[in-house]
Amino acid sequence: AQSVAQPEDQVNVAEGNPLTVKCTYSVSGNPYLFWYVQYPNRGLQFLLKYITGDNLVKGSYGFEAEFNKSQTSFHLKKPSALVSDSALYFCAVRDQEGAASKLTFGTGTRLQVTL
Amino acid sequence: EPEVTQTPSHQVTQMGQEVILRCVPISNHLYFYWYRQILGQKVEFLVSFYNNEISEKSEIFDDQFSVERPDGSNFTLKIRSTKLEDSAMYFCASSAVWSYEQYFGPGTRLTVT
Image 1: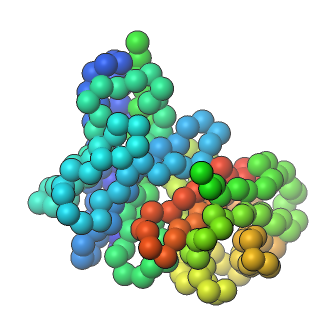
Image 2 (image 1 turned 30 degrees about the vertical axis):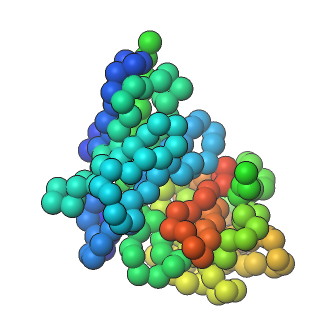
Image 3 (image 1 turned 90 degrees about the horizontal axis):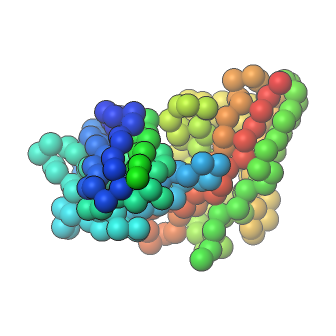
């Protein structure tokens, strides 16, 4: 069974500083990995994905994520945080088998960016 | 930019009542999903749907739940006899044949009293 772990409930960072939100995964076969962001009273917004290719993937709003197969990690990063990045971030994995495959989500990490 | 829409945004119902949650997926998407998020917990998969039939369902999706695509645009989730523990945010999602990511609607908050 596939699973995702987000070890930090909350990450605090000052505006302008780099941020990292951690994610590790477990899946049989090759993983398809995703990051989503949830703002208050809103749905989940897709940020970026890793399917294959370059280990560093770039996404929306200046976010990027680094896939590390040996550490089974897919950490979300941003070089310079903004107060408006404050939200709940979810890492997700899907089984490569089947086009309608479900996403399995982590428990989420709340990012708080302060001035 | 096309979006997944969901109605209503908030539904309050009494235990034992039937509810229908509605979703309009992105128009050229062919795969549809329902997820739920109980307050303070993670997002959980309920069911996926393709070509007018269920592709996969979780253990949560028991006989009280059903899904339907009644016409070319809507995708619905029905809970026949709601329980207190069904109180959650329900998200609809859709994806295209050629992409791996799923696009989520804003959710329906279901409160069962």
